[in-house]
Image 1 (cartoon, rainbow, N blue to C red):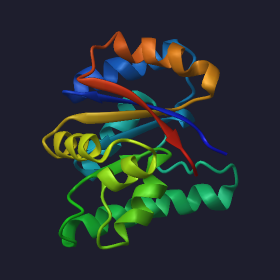
Image 2 (cartoon, rainbow, N blue to C red; image 1 turned 60 degrees about the horizontal axis):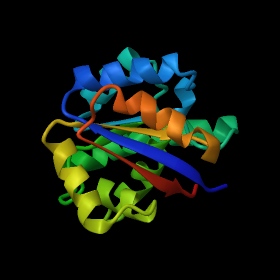
Image 3 (spheres, rainbow, N blue to C red; image 1 turned 90 degrees about the vertical axis):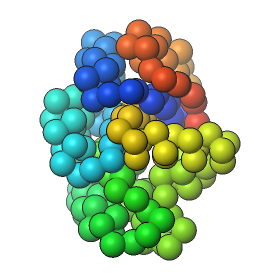
Image 4 (tube, one colour; image 1 turned 60 degrees about the vertical axis):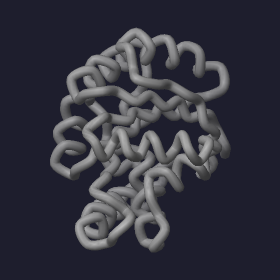
Length: 168
């Protein structure tokens, strides 16, 4: 079922972790939060630090969750050898989509964001920022929670926030 995806780009892991704390204080569940970083190690550390769940698929089934975890691991392996994908790894609900996209030669973070309705040039800018060390947090919400989540993220002064439409 399509739903809003609130995206926020942060200049550093420290600021992103502050934003995650604000999200948890605003009653956002860990399963709603995706963390995108430039390396697998950084992603794992941030997921633990932010109380985010790495490798969670959007679907509720155990099988889907396991496949989501595997997709994230596949992305990490592919990123090391496939030109054009880059060393970007995700934790949380975006990892399954990124893992799937990484299997295609043209796949990238920007293509995932574009498919969620982010303008192509903006999606490419976000991808470049993540490759340079910025951290992207994506929060899966209902329509009624967009403003609430946006306020929580804005309190940590992100580089940019926007709302996309996630269609699993």
